[in-house]
Each structure stands twice: as structure tokens, then as C-alpha cells.
Image (cartoon, rainbow, N blue to C red; front, side):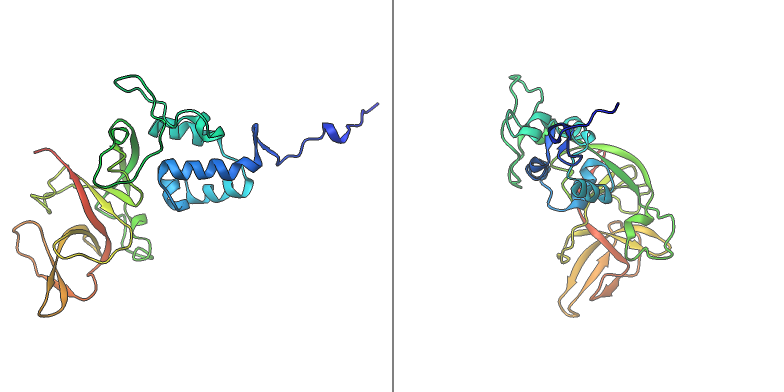
Length: 253
């Protein structure tokens, strides 16, 4: 004989995320965005090392995968209990005085908080040689660059929008020597006179070009970093596809 369950015994399938009420989902997600300093799903996906579609699925299901808590703890030292409940220290990380940090990060470019040096983030490293320049590489240039490894970076170097390129030649020496890593800010921005940019050229791959404003012609000139002779490209628009501005370089001296 089957026993009928009363309404009190029936649990709604979408009411809890492994013990977390659905009504807490938005608060948890907001804390995750706060501690990672992300505003878009794409930026959050990069930090978590997952696809952007996984973020959309999570928001649709109103459930936070347990793997997110583990990833944020491993990479940033974030306290899982704080993420779930909003109580306790924000970070669980060893310090000189063995005390946890109980304040979320502040994004101030003129300061270098201690947590940014102690916590790291593993990010992919891209080759500057594309697989192919056919198809839709102009619309999605990053997809044409193969991932050749990963590197652990301090948080101040691994901000949202930063991609890491590996220099396999001396083409951009001495600024970027063979074996160097370059952080490129891919967020849309207007080119700035005198700054160094990563440009994806068909049949050449990624090259480093310094943009110099020509006041007479009212356009940018793209100049190579080394002394090798090369024709200057002058145009109102960037020759090739502009990936972004080089904001830091890691290399042996």
C-alpha cells in the first residue's frame, strides 16, 4: 500500500540550492560580483574559468554551483560562508599576523592593497600566432589565438578585460622580448597618443605597434618598437584588428 505524502512533506524542486533558499540567490550572486569586481557575465566567466553560457544557465536555475565557491576560495581566498550567508570574514587567507581580511576589495588604481599580492588568479596565456585569419576573425579575433598555457597573476594584474599574450619572437624588443608576457586591456577605448597596442594583422598574427598622432594629417601612425625598417601605416582607423592597449609586461631583465 502506497503512502500518500501530505503537502508538508512535498518539497518544491526549485526552492533550495543545496540548502540555500532561492530568495538568497540574488544576494549571493551580488556578493560574488562584488568580491570579483565584475559587472558582466563575460567578466565573471573569465574569473571562474567557465563559459559565459554557464553563467546564464546558473541565473536561470537560480542555483549557485558548489564549484564556484571552491574556485573563488582557491583563486582569491574568498570565504565560502561569507558568500552564502553574508557573515564572517570576506577572505580566509594566511597573513603575517594570521588574521583574516574582513573587508571587500576596493578598486583604487593608486593603491596596491595587500590582498592583491597575496591572492592570485590563474588566467590563460594566448599565442601571438593565430590558428587562422579566415572567417569571422575580425569580429572575434581572440578565438583565432590558441591558448598555449596558463599563468598565475596577482589580482592587480588580472583585472577584467585583461588577456595575456606570450612573445615568441624579438619583434617588439626591447619593450617586449622573446619569452615575455604582455597584459592587454581589451576593453573598448579610443587610442591614446604614445601608447603601445596589440594589433592582429592578417597573415602576420599579433604585432605590437605604438600609436603616434600625426597632427598634420590628423591620423595615427603605427610604429614598430624595434629599429627594423618597416612601412608606417597611417589611417584614421587601425590597420588590422585592434585587440587592446598593452598595460603591463612581465619579462626577465
